[in-house]
Structures are given as C-alpha cells and as structure tokens.
Image (cartoon, rainbow, N blue to C red; front, side, top):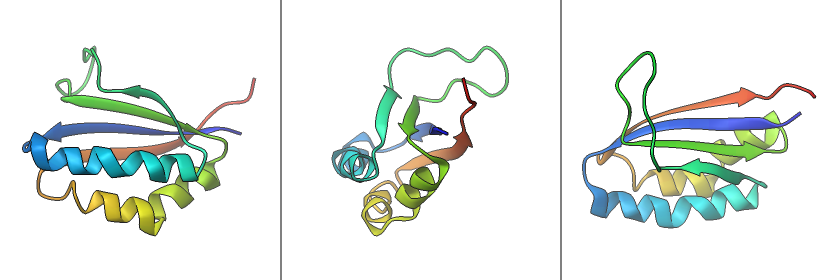
Length: 97
C-alpha cells in the first residue's frame, strides 16, 4: 500500500533553504519517492493559515517512506533546513483501491 509524506514549510532564509531543496530530491528518488506537489498555489480552507510551501511525496510503501526520512542522506539534507525553516512532516499510509 502506498504512503505519502505531507509537509508544510515556512521558510525564513530562502537562500540557505535552497541548499535543502538541492539535496533532498536525491534522497526521495533513492527510496522511490515521487513528488506530487511541491510549492505552488494553495489555500487553507480550515485550520491554520496557509504555509508558504506544501509538499506531497508518494512512496510505494509506508516502510519506504519511513526509511527515506530516517536515512543518512535525507538527514544530511535536513541539516540545511535547520534554523532557516519551520517544517511539519507527516507520513500517512494510503488507502487501497
């Protein structure tokens, strides 16, 4: 069953954050991740205010999604996000059918 990363990100230093966005996609690809949404137009219909960036990444399984997040390659990319962005990342299992 597929799984998805859902991330909401508010960036305070776009230049430094770009170092994260240069490195993270390689980690996603290494674990079969496929970007479905990254930035782009969005509007909060309920809940908190719209974050600057919303990201959705599809993985073939929940285990692959977790392994990607926990990987040294992704954690190294995350180091470039620390202190320059506030991120909320949720991994959710998809539904069958």
